Length: 199
Image (cartoon, rainbow, N blue to C red):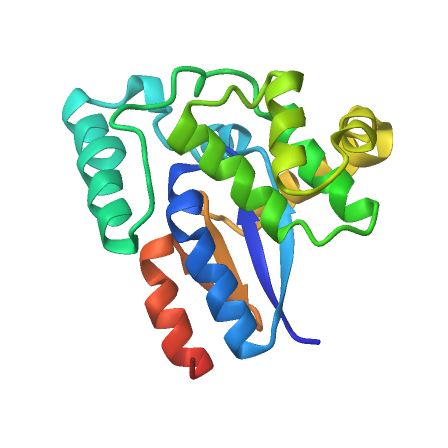
């Protein structure tokens, strides 16, 4: 089956805003989603983009405030009225939990959605095992094997490979989608992607 490559980080606001619409598009287009969780912070560092903490207050207020609220209203999904409390925490465990799910044969569409939603709508800490357990249970996935595997060399290697590929492809951030090699950056391009797919 043809795929939609989906490069994202499990804590990304804009991945969250577009996730449900991505699932709809993929289903309508009869394409599987090829999940590629990667280290967004390493991408930002490698590409010379200004780190979030070093951006102007006006930039933060718009891109991580007004724009998020606007798109959440447009897509009719809940979102916090502030950046999640633990957004600065490490993102390795959560991203690697998603990769572990893939390796164990799960369709992680629902797990990744619940992870993004829990962080941006309920202020979950994605570096806290107990919060990730709750996320797994909500997605009807046994979280323990995933959390155990998340620390494995195999999973960490795939995570590093995904990140290196994101850097090599000169991605701008999360989310980024590919259809047959054609890149679409940002959830605000999902409608264009749907048009191209005829859905």
